[in-house]
Amino acid sequence: MPLEVQLRVRLTDATYRWYLLRQVPVRNAAGQIRHWFGAGIDIHDLQSLEERQRVLVAELQHRVRNILTVVRSVFARTVDTGGTLEDVADHFRGRLDALARTQVIVTQTPSGAVDLENLIRDELLSVGASDGPSLMLSGPDVSLSSSAAESIGLAMHELAINAVKYGALKFPNATLDIRWQVDLDCRGARRLTLTWTEQGVPAVSISPTRQGFGSELIEEALPYRLGADTRLEFLGGGVRCSISLPLSD
Image (tube, rainbow, N blue to C red):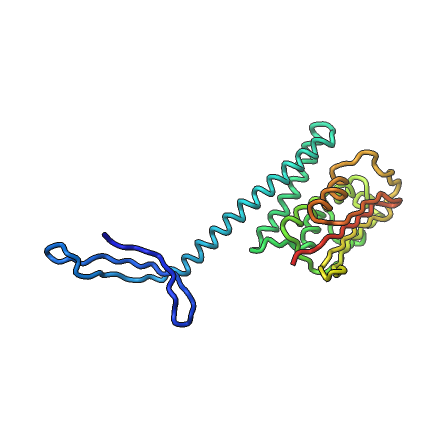
């Protein structure tokens, strides 16, 4: 019977490579094995590719499970906030689109890291807002993990939608200032602080008596999911929101 085996071979430089060894017996007229004939094939690169594929499949399965969990949570909370069926469908569709935009950015890099500024700009562009005298963005380059990007992206979506309906993105003389910075905490760990400040909004309503999806996301979900410190205020002139969270290395 032919013999086929895969094994790691130690080379003269002390490194190891995978080889595929194949051997077949050579018999005489009486059917006795006189010797073996075979060859060794270097399959190290193929093994590395197969291992990488297994890791990617496992990562994809993990990511799919995570995003489905987030979608279920978003749907449940959207329904719980009440409203007409049309309103619920519209809000859920917008939040699902925000998650989809984040996933597109996540898949653009092998590490799954997301650039914070691109994330914010995508959410603003989705509601028709771009740079100008009434919109200011400033801050250093910051990479977010995929899980942090999902939550921050949703928070930016909720703030942007609120600004379009009631705040700085509705009134021509109002301004929206979004800025962020990275500092070191008392333990030397990096921490991101992001602020969303609206000014010049006339006739601002008082703070809502019922907590909506956006308020719950910022005040409860972000601290729970990301260990963030958050503050959401409905002030005279517009909304102010601050989010501070630890950054992974």
